[in-house]
Length: 255
Image (tube, rainbow, N blue to C red; front, side, top):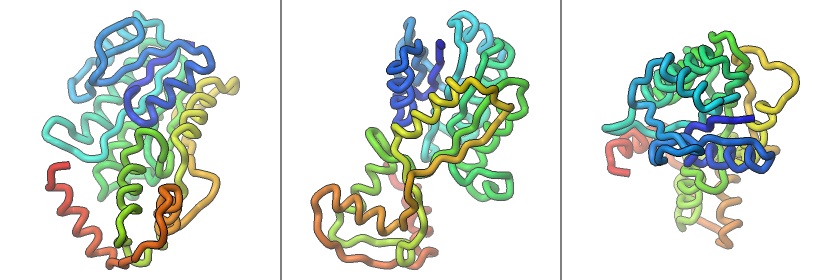
């Protein structure tokens, strides 16, 4: 199978590329920082691309399947959720349908269910818009919604590791929020399984992925401390409303 992996230099995309090549699939890596080549394709969803041009490009590359792993955690001057998560992938998906691509897998986010659940969170809403665009197309496709992803290259895991290493750790409330982290290699295995599955996929089948064991947010940070060989920490419960205010203020800081 010849697979186009979008966002190939990111945490999930990189793992998907390696999982596919381990099974002897041919992979074309697409990302903003990659040069043009036989096995690479420069990709920037901030730039508008006509679906017919995508169809021509996919046909020329003899692409059998597409995996979209592109994602940003925050918007910036040169990146918006609307273009990177919604409109850009939507153009690609429509082009894939025109080109007769066999199967598409979209890596979305856990918590995206409907417009009501995503309405107040621009990140989730933009992911939902791409999911809905894909599901409406007449082709086999899967929407993968992973929980917190940890492993090599995970920005969120790096943040949690930094927080866990502090001698005084602030938690939203008592830190009892349930999470179910999943390793990036497990996410990659699930994506490859969906591409290889012999049974046909419906259009826009949804698969929610979580790790083997639910834990609380505080338990997760304790596990990070244990992995780093650190002892007990001091815990500072912070009212959730105050924590959300701090997070909103942090969005205006350079990071």
